[in-house]
Image (cartoon, rainbow, N blue to C red; front, side, top):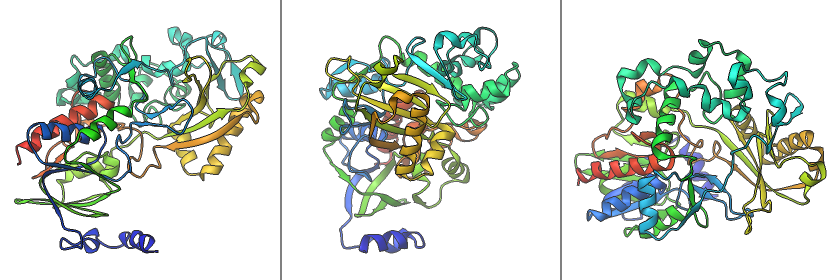
Length: 475
């Protein structure tokens, strides 16, 4: 009852009224307190300690890694977030090597090949070999031969105006910070072509109308730099979460788990962070959480309006995953591939071969994104599971009763994430990209959404490194 009452009170009272400075637990005193034990916060902590700073990391979850999460309770230990490590992930690979985390070739997850996935559109099941000539193919020219899951990645590649990976933040390129739909409609794309490429199993955002073309241009330049998906792609042995686990163990100042930060107070003398478990005092603070989590936290004094506006408005991709174990080899019964790309609530269905021999199907995942993920997030877990299974069985009758659900992962419903990764809407790069990383007095900001060059895991590492240097100037 006490915990429930506390949560109810939080909805209507300032957190400072619940955890005063003179609370029962004495405030910690360190050089830098870091909020968030994801890659960004952990890299900041290690960089600071290498410079002799006293550090304490606080984390609301009961584990390190943030949105990098290996599922050890699903056969084959698939990744719920953070699947591939590019050969250009210099910071991540450096930490892995120095901490003794071995690497191996990447395990394919959401990628499809032209001959190993079914296409299910408007109730019709189509083999990839028939897609180019199919009446439901909305594309024109050479794009008709491209499988639907690959269209979005080729749609803008030839239009990329960026000369360098850092140019996406340059105000000189702001005219390209427009909706993807604006760019492609001018090239003759139909509404149906846009919907299939950018609103059906989208990689970023919900549709071609809510995603910045500039973000895509940056993704392409970043991929060149990081060699994402190329021959150098790899993963950590035992799962990618082995990297943040090793980093967390290496933090000398320790990590306090289950300590959700509520308020960050700063003045000329230092910083105080109020958490569920007590107060932490330091000379400076690094806030290394997604903007979607930061907007649930209070910073005192208030941030500049443009910075707060960016924190409040930055969207995050919704991703829903249903992990399942096959109870029989239904794909042998119907003679069809184990992978499907659908416009149903099943999203992308992938048979993962993560067993010891790399050949046997260890589990399946229905990987759902965009509007379909939002719809599933509005349901109860039981209803969402039933909806996904029903659509799988509608496309593949042989799968009826052959998949046992074992785990749901919803990044949209995760209270510490609010989505899988930052997804810039049209105009937001121009308005917020250079504002979000700016320190506010003794409070420094990190997280992949504040990175300048990279995205994803390496972006998080980059931002943590930059934040550590900024914090050093404050202590």
